[in-house]
Length: 344
Ligand code: NAD
Ligand code: WQD
Image 1 (cartoon, rainbow, N blue to C red):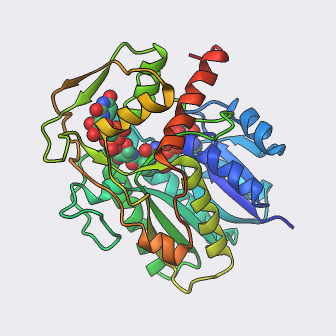
Image 2: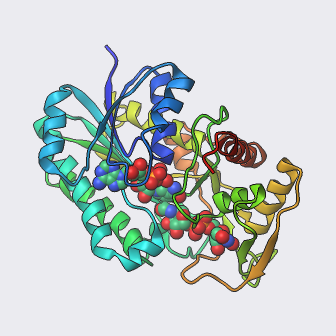
C-alpha cells in the first residue's frame, strides 16, 4: 500500500513541486492549505503532470481541532512535510504577531498530534536565513546560528528549536530539518511554478515579470558589496531538485535509514552566483536584454552566502543536478505560460 504523506502548504510553490515528486515516487499525497498564498487551481497543474489527483483539504494549520479531524478522517498518515508558513520577510516586520502565530502554532499543532496518530516523522522547511551573514562560505550545518534579522527568520530558528526540544523530551517521532538556500525555477512542463501575489519581493520572479513587461525595470539592490562584481551572491537551487530532496528525506525517516532522531541538511548547489551573473543568464536563455538599473542596497540583505551541501550529498544521497541556465529557462517558460493563460 502506498505510504500516505501529509503535505501542509502543498498548493504553494515548493509544496506543489514536492507533491509531484512524491506521487511519481509512489507516495499518496494529502494536501492541506488555507490558500492564503496560493490557489486551488495548482491542483490541476499537478494532475496534468502526474495523472494523479491528490487529496486536497482547505484547512488552516493553526486550527487544532480541524487538524485533529483531518488525522481522524485520513487515518494512517505515515509522515508529514510541513511547508505551510507565511514567508514574506518585510511583511513579518510589519505584522510580527501574525507571523509568530501562523508559523509557530501550525508546527506545534502538528507535533502535538503526531504521537497520538502514530505519525512517524516530519520534514520541516527551514532556511539558510538562520545563518545570517556567514563568517565563511560555503557554509555548513555546524556554522553558528546568528540572531534573526526579521520575525520571519526568527520563526524558522524557534521552530527548529521546538522540534529539537520536543524530540529531546522523548517524543516518539523523527524529524529532518531542511535548510533551503534560494529556490528558483519551475517544473519543466510549466504546468506549475512560482506565483507571487502582488509585486514580487524575490529576484527571479521580478526578473521574469520585467522580461515579459509586467514590471518596467528591475532594481538591482547595490553593486558596492565586497564581491567580484559588487552585487550580492546567493546559492540558487532548482525547485525540482529541491522537491526531490524531500522525497529522499521522507524515505530516510520512514525506513529508519538513520538512528538519529533529528537531522539537519543544507539544500543548495554549493555554487555562489551573483545578482548580475543571474541577470546575464536570464538575458542568455531568454534572448532579450533585461531593463535594470543599479540602486542602493536593500536593508537587511546578506552580502554573500552559498551552501556547503556535502552532508546532503553524502549522507542523504541527494545532489542538485540542474544547471542554472536550465533553471532560469524554466522560470521564463513558466512566466510565458502565465501570459498565454491570461493570468498575468
Ligand atoms: P508559498 O507561500 O508558496 O507556500 C506556502 C503555502 O502555505 C501557501 O500555499 C500558503 O497558502 C500555505 N499556508 C500558509 N499558512 C498556512 C496555514 N496556517 N495553514 C495552511 N496553509 C498555510 O511558499 P514556498 O516558497 O513554497 O515556501 C514553503 C516553505 O519553505 C515555507 O515554510 C517557507 O518559509 C520555506 N522556505 C521558502 C524559501 C523560498 O525562498 N521560497 C526559502 C527557505 C524556506
Ligand atoms: C536575492 C538577491 C537582493 C530583488 C529571501 C529571504 C530568505 C529566503 C529567500 C525564506 C539579493 C537581490 C532582489 C530585486 C535585487 N526565504 N534583489 N532586486 O534576500 O536571498 O532571501 O528569500 O526563507 O529568508 O530573505 O532572496 O530573491 O529576495 O534576493 O537586486 O528586485 O537579489 O538584494 O541580493 P534573499 P531575494
